[in-house]
Amino acid sequence: MTADDLARDVETGTGSEGLDLLRRSVAEALGTGLLVMAVIGSGIMATQLSPDDVGLQLLENAFATAGALVGLILMFGAVSGAHFNPVVTLVDRAFGSVSTRDSIAYVAAQIVGGCLGAMVANVMFELPIVELSTKDRSSPALWLSEVVATIGLLLVIHGSVRTGRAAVVPFAVAAWIGGAYWFTSSTSLANPAVTIARSLSDSFAGIAPASVPMFIVAQLVGAVLAFVLIRFLYPSTTVEERS
Image 1: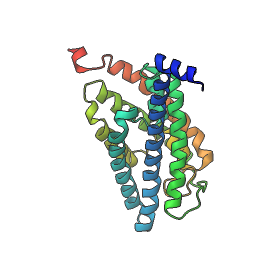
Image 2 (image 1 turned 90 degrees about the vertical axis):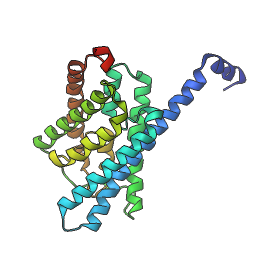
Image 3 (image 1 turned 90 degrees about the horizontal axis):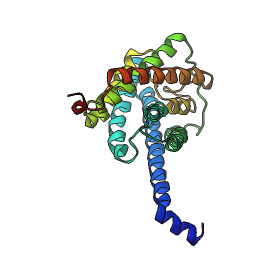
């Protein structure tokens, strides 16, 4: 870049906009990576601490994931909106809350960050940096669970924001995901980036690569249905607009 190019960017704001998008994308990558570390790392720890009790393993995994979600959304919400999830970003794009350029950057950052997070989680527990999961998760019941989990997640987010309660989103999202670990047969992945990342760890939270495509399809179906429901249930964005 020449001095003239830099001066032109300063005058037009292009340079600052690019830096802002980079900052937000890094936040999305870091947040998604830390979320995946929480999911995979707590799953590995749970199997080590409670090797003979799968129910307790799931409880430990769900509790750690929910706790991490609260912290991560509070940590990065003011920077990028704390999406950490391509379906959240895509629904926001459908509503016009983010641009196409920003959406592409967010989704790419989420996938890359999630995969790096899985690798770090593996290394933290002295496992191979990449160890493809052998845990097959393939059945109509699991796919339906992902549709339900994704719809619920998006309704929790938009229901809170559109009724003037954005401050409760970190806790509402954590409560939904923590609960959905238990009432969905898929244990509520509800996130394409996390789904892809979990295929890189042959651990408690893993998913076989062959199972990933249909999980993502189910999550996208859930996102479409959630978009329709959000438009119908919350035609106005705040309490004040409806009063």
